[in-house]
Length: 400
Image (cartoon, rainbow, N blue to C red; front, side, top):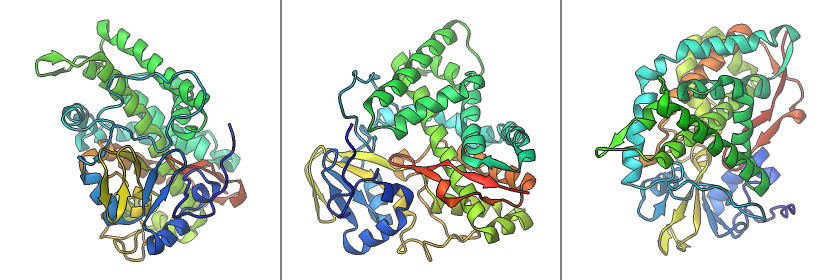
């Protein structure tokens, strides 16, 4: 596998895996908005990158010209064994209507406000247990030891699968999302996920439980059982989408609070500010970029897009657009007018947004309750992952 050449012209040859983009994309977005708000590249195929809020929202709502059947920001490439394929992909996120519509309805009850409230005590206790493991040491990797441990265990509980496999699940999800340029790792992750859920589905056929996987397996659509391939796809989606995205948001928030003591102390002294602060941290450090595939030759705001081109739904850049947010590059914890698109926009808006918000709030609250003073051990040691999901993967912090 060869290392791609560094980017020298962001408007015509961008690369979302370029280290400069992964580590600090904000200045790149600012420059593009003023010179070329929808950039283009031929790396990994013809791909477009919008950076303005309204463009991203308009694209998200145009499901006829911009399909969700191919959502991977980095396409599968290279010489490797064939990647396992589910007949329906990962619905509802990889589906267009009508399949999208009814598969999303299967999920929504499990992530309603009322259902999510039932997970709060478990999530808070989990956060406390994790802190017990490192508080006395005076140091921790806030990403590896904390942020990355929370969502995977909550999702395992919802799916009814063993939380003891959390590290295994984490490895598979990272293989799928973070190492798309490494075909061997990506295949390993996909095979691991699919193989695991095939076994779990077989168990639920004779021994169902009170969990999402059992519920899906025993659901019906138009009088017929939901196909097993659909159940596998939805279950894999819940694990993939519910793990890396949320731990990235938690990690980015802790990075911000470690680097900005005035904001950290504000939340410690005024816990009532937390709900608005969570929304602002989601806006400022939105982790997820999705892709759409152009269904027909078309023009979008002067850009001649061809059928088969990809458009990257750059929700993180949209949330930093000064035309949509006053002082967009400032983190204002009590920002009240905050129509961010961290969870997407349109029919594919994240079905698990209630859960993600809850996990983020519980994680920050418990950390600040136990560790109100902390700072980065060494900014140079912080590492970030990028591409589909951006967030810190190594975040060493120290505290009294």
